[in-house]
Length: 427
Image 1 (cartoon, rainbow, N blue to C red):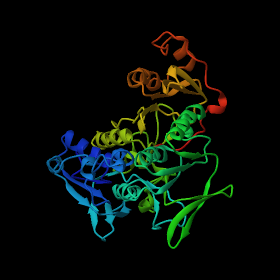
Image 2 (spheres, helix red, strand yellow):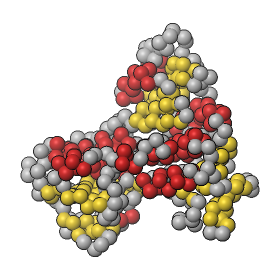
Image 3 (tube, rainbow, N blue to C red):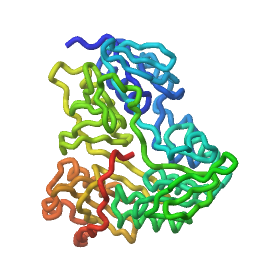
């Protein structure tokens, strides 16, 4: 096998960096270029809505690698260089400054961007939370202790609400879901989360859409809800999901849909591979085309894309993973293994909702598909193999594999009304 003489990685976040490191780790000694749209060296995103927003970390602490480690990769690092086009015939990446970067092998890891409400781009007082600049701008705003209205009750909205309350802001959280994070956790566990936020002083408004942002004097002053109510605001955070960054690939021949549509090995075209939030692939475990927006998945896919790019013909390995994501809210550590969205049954395994310390299994089509733990790190870890092996639901319960360690009987499944609806990629 002759390795490509030049590899270009587009996207300098977790997935792109993992791909570059994976190539070098496997002995690739050819030309390696890492292109990033942002001017920052690769940094970690989960702390943006947690430690950085709270002010307990400064920006430099989010760096994924030191300058010395990056230098040791012997790569050309082109930051502040947005990719605007891909010529797959010439095998060149086109950059915003008009320059072209030739490649023999290409990894695309351009990630996602925050979804915005129409007409709010650049409006003072309206924030999203995806980049380092986003987090620093919102942090500066929160220092003024405004009434923060959060549109969206997912990971970003719930975490930001907790941080903002800690900083002394009045907070209203608006979501069209029955409960915060109920898309991922189900209604009963979402209700627990709602109660926790309410106890900390967050006003939670559920089951209603944010119709538009009120703007007065060129600045956001409130949010108009679909039921006609208006919530005044000193600042608005819009946390309504993310959009894959694929527009620059239009006309390239790379298959696009909800992200880059790769095959099971993450291959998206001749010499082209994809990784991270932007990659959609048929998961060999479930057969379903999947796109995952989790930090751990980005690192795993970057390494897998690098490995498969260097593999002998026919030797590329299908990518499979058990997604993992966590969320910190007040004194709650919420962890999720697998895919909980779209589950058709949920059962508590250990602990209790009242104690706010529990684990729960999620099932779909007769198999375990996910596990959630709140303030239960080790018991949750024990459930991960059931998720990875997609153990039949009845077998998981009957075999005692999920028997509570304290000897209590396994509670019955949570009512069907609590089952979350299917969702797209999660954070």
